[in-house]
Image (cartoon, rainbow over all chains, first blue to last red; front, side, top):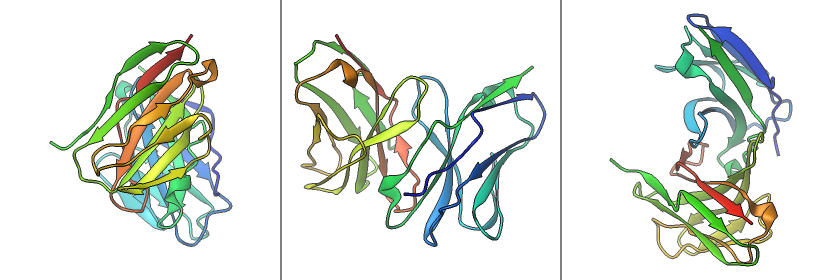
Length: 111
Length: 112
């Protein structure tokens, strides 16, 4: 069961780039790295997923070093609406049911 | 648009009563999950299913049961509700086995 370690909270200001790093030292060969966003009173929402190197979509980028023991979610030019909890998950094709959500990182974006 | 819906959204019940939370998805996903989230904590997996008639226990399955009689629904039953089961419950579904889960809006259960 690959657990993850993230900062409990982070503060940022509107317009800044935010990088949230996640440690997953026990990641398995078949595991993907997945990030979710959760607003209060809502279910988590899938943001981005990657296996290695860099992945970019319309809302974020995910950087994964060669050893895959950590990953960094990058949110460009955050706004107040990006205030949420961000979860880093590790799991893959054969064990994704054992995703460990942990407590996530509470991102607080200030005006 | 396809979606996943949970009902009821809010429920207050008494200790010892049986409670069923419904989850319905229209994506035709094979995989469905139930999580609970307690104040200030992440999500913990209760039960999951990979398809019709398949059910599996998760991390915190004691006191809960599920059944999967069709692709669209995975109801969660608390046989005898306890105060420790006061929580927000989230249902999710997925098609691929790579962790892209689609969550419902949650059901807030209070056991008095």
